[in-house]
Length: 169
Ligand SMILES: [Zn+2]
Ligand SMILES: [Zn+2]
Image (cartoon, rainbow, N blue to C red):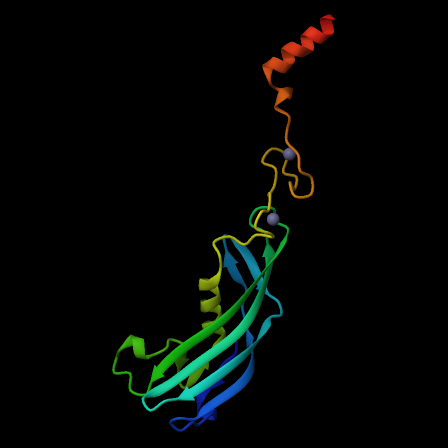
């Protein structure tokens, strides 16, 4: 997983550090299905700014997830652009708002940060397209490729009666 060693960048108040980083992402499970980041490492831009009382971390990245469509199980692709911001106070004093959970022991966990933000940015269901017709509940065939209905007349008694009438003619 991708970390940034904060000890490697020593900033004085007012200074900033910019970095192009490749952030390794783990697959995400949503609705029982697995969605894989492609590429596995997302290109990102990281800006670390030292303020007088703490440090601001900003991360921008574009992520593409590949996985099955919730309705038809064909390939679906989802793209998200994330612009994230975290703050770590110099002396947090126990307040959670002034610390980021992604900094520990002098390291910023970029993978965990990006993954959590991505999970929050996902829709409830990932579809191949917004109007995906899904699979036929009767025969299981893909209704996008083969739009069809199962003719109810096969079992409809009115049609059966018509059939009998036709036989008699
Ligand atoms: Zn679909
Ligand atoms: Zn069918």
